[in-house]
Every structure is written in structure tokens, then in C-alpha cells.
Length: 134
Image (tube, rainbow, N blue to C red; front, top):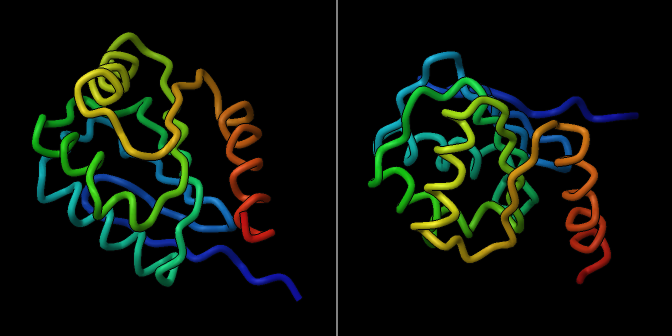
């Protein structure tokens, strides 16, 4: 029997886990440090302490504070994610993604993508490696 994905929402995003963490930010989300902390805490509860690859949909984000970006590139985020695919489309979401990559230097493999399908395909390699102990 298949287990349905675990999911819940914070003030800024809907987060689901089905072998891959899938976080989709709500339209116009303005993400501050408290939001980043809340999102990582919820992700940790949904993954039950496992590190999984994460697809983060930034397409609807209005802004993300420097403190939030720094937190998301730190050890608390590393504890829940083994790789991160940032999905962007608009110039604004691409800017948020590029700021994150350029200034915060995440410790896990992280890439920008224009669509979810390519992002999830890239993440599947990390999910499969984790499932086989490597």
C-alpha cells in the first residue's frame, strides 16, 4: 500500500514530502528569518529527521531577506536536505535564487531550474543514492 505524501503549510509555503521535499511558496511571499526557521522546522517534522533532496519553488516569492538566505544555507537546512533544486521563472525569482547561490554558498549541491520536471529529474539521482546508502 502506498503511503500518501506528508504535507502541511507555514505562513509562506506549502511543504510536502514524497521521497523528495517539495516546497512551494505562496504568491507574494515575503520570507524573513522567522519564516525560514518555521519552514525548516516543518520540513524536519515531515521528513522525520531524514535528509532528503528538496525542490524549492521560488516562482511566486516576492522577497527573501538576507538573514533568511543565510539561515537556509546553514546547518539547520543541511540537516534536512541533501540537495536543493531551486525552481525559478520570473526575473524576480531568478534574482532571489541567484542571490542565494552567489552570496550564501550552500553546503549541499544546489542548482537553479526553469521547471519542476527538470528539477525533480536532477533530484532523483540524490534520492536514489540516499536509498542505496550512498
